[in-house]
Length: 222
Image 1 (cartoon, rainbow, N blue to C red):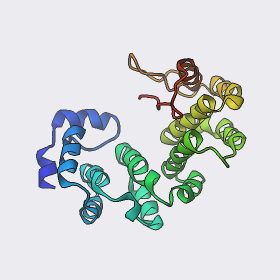
Image 2: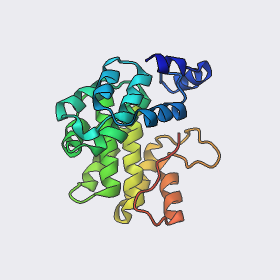
Image 3: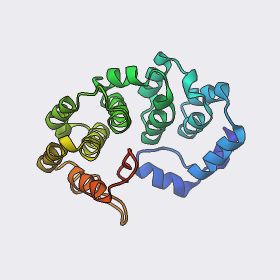
Image 4: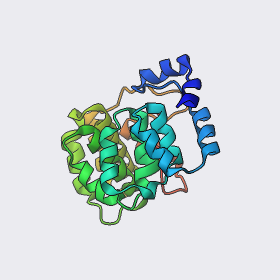
């Protein structure tokens, strides 16, 4: 914790706080620290329990994802209220867990929109990598009915799902584009030069145009 405190940079904190994160540690330096520590599950758990954002980010870099039980992961996602912690927890830990599919189903229907957004993030992974068994038409129905008025983080992940359905599944592309055009979610989202807009119709068109050889399209940058 002392070492993390020494890495605190006020300018980095100012930037992070604009995105809802309350830490000032440069992520490159955080990763360097994690590389030195290597995998340490016990330390990772202790760091998580501090509740400190930088400590929790470090915890996810040095933990063993498959060592967490289902209930532990459920509790952790409910505690992860900061965007970066939430994103890393889902991406670096839950996606590698044997409980990922079980939690995806449970979380997607959770009344807490932050928890539900984790379920939708896992669904995006399924849409892109393992769509067999998914009800894509049903997902589009839910997105069409609920995305427009969903809270920000949940809306973002539902939009990711909409775009990936359109990108990865040609038979649903026209409907995905139509939903995006009608709902206009993230249509005016500020996008840096060289980055793809997260507005689904634009994102879908750009990825299809590139005709990438990989099975997973990159996420929008924002």
